[in-house]
Image 1: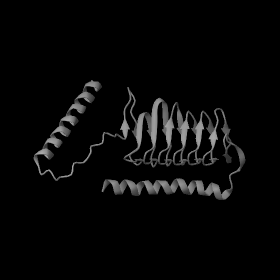
Image 2: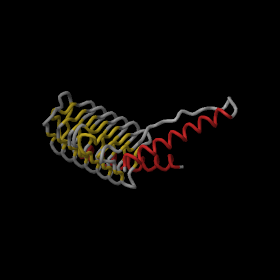
Image 3: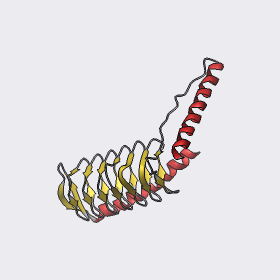
Image 4: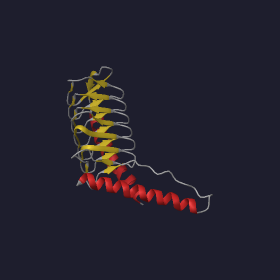
Amino acid sequence: MTSVSRTLGRCLRETGQALHRFGHQCQDSTLIMETFSRHRQLMPLAASAPAVAKDAWVAPSATLVGEVDVSGEASVWYGAVVRGDTGAVAIGKGSNVQDDAILGSGDVSVGAGVTIGHGAIIKSSTVADGSMVGMKAVVESATVEQGSIVAAGAVVEPDTVVGAGQVWGGNPAVYMRDVTPAEKAQLTKSAEGYVALAGSHATSIAA
């Protein structure tokens, strides 16, 4: 029944698009024709579909596929891709997945108040509460424990455990030092800041 509904829905959408184009052709030739985008934020896959909390925010150009769960006050930003096709992906309360980041390729668990930086890649890994994965960092089949930092551009190899409250960096990533009290405070401030920023984007887009 679901398959029939999806097929019918697609046919109706394409019929509407055809009528829209025909209407333009019947009007003044100087009118501007806008390109229709088929992009979908939320895409079901087989029996699984993304679940997004009412107070979470997903950017218009982000993509969530399959078994994905986004908790309250979390945000998935422009161009980010979260793929729950080969495993479940969970994004905790108040966490942010920034622009062009990619999550998937197996089970991925992102805790609460986590920051996933621009262009970061998280595969088959766990990122615990209050941690940060820096811009363009790669974390594959690894564990990032609570309140830790993976530096920008770092590559965390499979089976690595980034200890709680530690800073790791490099390729391959290695322990560098412990997180300072100032950095710990900044991790919390960053996550809270993105909750507020996501709210302003959601309001502006809905207006």
